[in-house]
Image 1 (tube, helix red, strand yellow):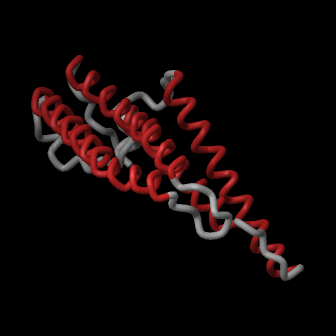
Image 2: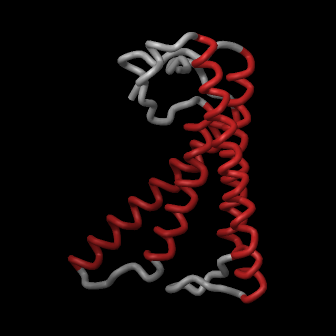
Length: 169
């Protein structure tokens, strides 16, 4: 488990800042839409599209920093029973599986992204083209992939730290 007081690098800070801004935008649009709809009976045009775009940005850019610092939810069933070598092997296997899964996800998304570009798919309310959203998704996937590479490097460098009572969740 990484030290929670350690300062993150530049890439996780940038990804996290983008995810935070997207979360704030999403919350503000939802609150404003509900208030305007309830008080003045005039909803915000395009709120659905803005919230869905902000949710995409928040999810894709928020995962990379979590993966890079191994901040996923860990269940330490065998950590206290296993040797440091076993824990290092499990961390390595976990990072390899995560890397493979996100490479597969990226590969599986190429077809739908190209279709959205070729056929001019558009959003529901504002009619925005959807191919830029796919580009944002691929940038976020690159951040997640970077996080798994950081996990792989950490697993190869030294023994994995066993989660503590505080840091396990």
